[in-house]
Image 1 (cartoon, one colour):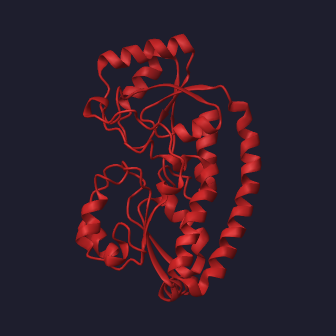
Image 2 (tube, rainbow, N blue to C red):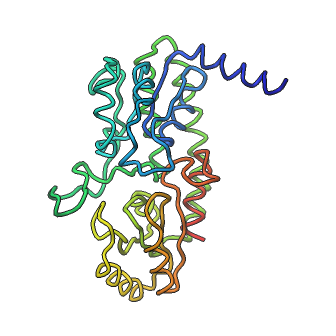
Image 3 (tube, one colour):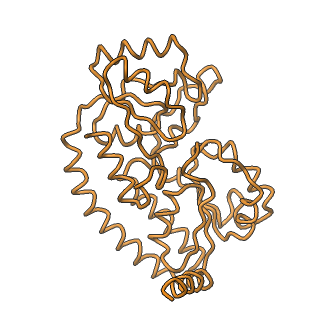
Length: 293
């Protein structure tokens, strides 16, 4: 009986939601739900278990995009390899680039790591800067505000509700950040190695230094020469922590860790990408705990 009631409530909420919102990734979806509440029905297009650069553009995603009132994307070139053809083939005028129902969050973010030049010689670089900004919890209120403003534009009748949801969420998040930042102070100055530059925003925020990447260049598989050079650099700098995401191969990180007596810690890159990171708070708590422990 309880299951029947729960299913009925879920279906009823979805039925009366004012707006159908698609987000490209889980973290954006989680923030949208906080701001939109019962007035939005949120669908996440890309699985958090896979490389966000290369989500498989399945036909099922087209049906989701065709009925969407709003598409929220990360931007910064992160979806460039899979989203544009889906938008084009969805034939939904509401969510075309520049349309009222299209939102690129990167336009609200002060992007870091902007390359001085873009060339295949530098690997798969992003011309607008590092697109993995959602790992910084201090950017969550900025993302939430951009989403709320867009929802208010599309659903003016409920603008007061979205504003109230935003205010409530922002206040609670600022309280959360006070405790979060206090816990992270002890981690300042720590040195780590990443596989891919997924966590630069978080590391910069909390004064943690990444002395190198397992990838010799973005999107390029590690070579023996680069791996040996990284080994020596880790020894010189006393680095004992390697940050590993869920979708890159793990063999190289384990090999390096054995050679320099370091530990490999698996860090979520998106809400739900690692078991136990299914909420916004759990996502950021896990990043902090696994990097700083």
